[in-house]
Structure formats: structure tokens, C-alpha cells
Image (cartoon, rainbow, N blue to C red; front, side, top):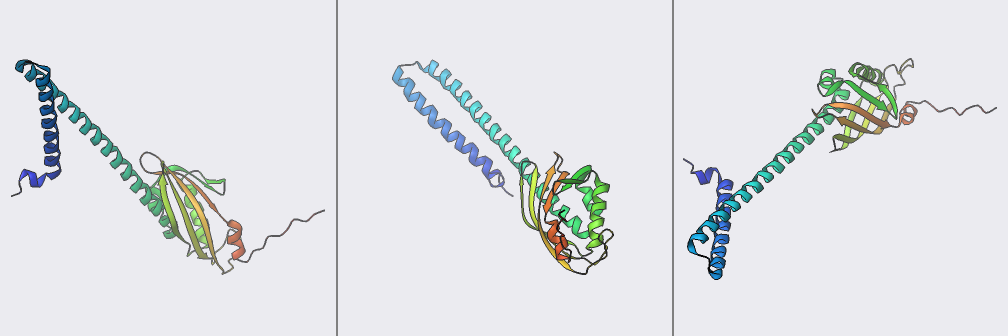
Length: 219
């Protein structure tokens, strides 16, 4: 059977350290009181008061340290949740998994692409995903770098796929494309995605499919 010290080594070490420091401080006080000629009765009272004060100060410090540790643990848990949600968001795009997408987003999620709002709820987001996956059935999004900060995640990613489906009303070209982009996801206090802001080279995508940019006709 484990002893108390074996089961709770950190607690025992902390208590022993506090006791040693307290005893050392009391011995120093006793020497100082002797030098001042303080009577033994008064000395015992003063030592008792100082012991209580030391205990209270130590308890307050430990309580503050516990609070800091609790806050840090909560922040770390939130960051891990945001990282996982960000990875699952990209995974949902790749796997066409709307159930997964709904589980990590709020109903009135707002999405913007290159500065323009493309959807304002989950249904609109799903329509956007269907639009792109109709044109690129093998669409795949791979995260290159991902960090979280102040309730947001920042991801650089690579998107690949082949235009074998209808792109709106335009027939497929059968050509491959590779695009890079950057996405900022904003989270609420529950760790759900409330906003997406994505930026990517749309012109590069359609040019890879064989489209060309026609200069304007100047009069």
C-alpha cells in the first residue's frame, strides 16, 4: 500500500518547505526579541501572532497560484478546442461532411471570401461548399500552418482538385488546379465558429482551368 507521501509527493514537499521556512523565520525572530529584552510571555504571544500571519500569507499565495493555474488550464483547453475545430472545419470541406460542419459552427455563421460576404448561416455555407465541390468533386484542402490567438485561429492552406464538374453554368475543363489561401476563423466562448474570413487567388484558379482574362475594350 502506498504511503501518503508516496501518493501525494508534491503536497508533502510543499508542506515541509513551508514548515522549514516558518521555523527558520521564528528562530530569527526569537533571537531578535531576546536582544530587545522582550519578556518570555510577550515573546510567545508575538511568535504566535507571527506564525498565524505566516500561515495566512502562505495560504493566500497558494490560493492565488491555484487560481492562476486554473485560468491557464482553461485557456489551454480552449486553444486545443479551437485547433481541433479549425482542423475539422477544413476536413468538413474536403469530405463534404455537413454534420461535422454543423457541430462546430453556430447557425448564423457569417462567411466572407476575398472581402465579400458569401453566406450568413449554415445553410448558405453548405450551398457554397456544394457549389465548389460540384465543380471540383475531388477538392482537397490541406492546412499548411495553423495558430490560435485571442479567440481566433489563423490558417494558411493549400487547395487542390480537378475541374470535372459544372462550374456554375460552365462545363468542366478537366484540368487540375492548385491554390493557396489564408483563413481566419472567429470563435465564441463555447468554442464554436461564428465567422470565417478567407482569402485566395480566384483568378489563379480559373486560369489553371484554361480561362483567360480579357482586357477591356477601350473606346
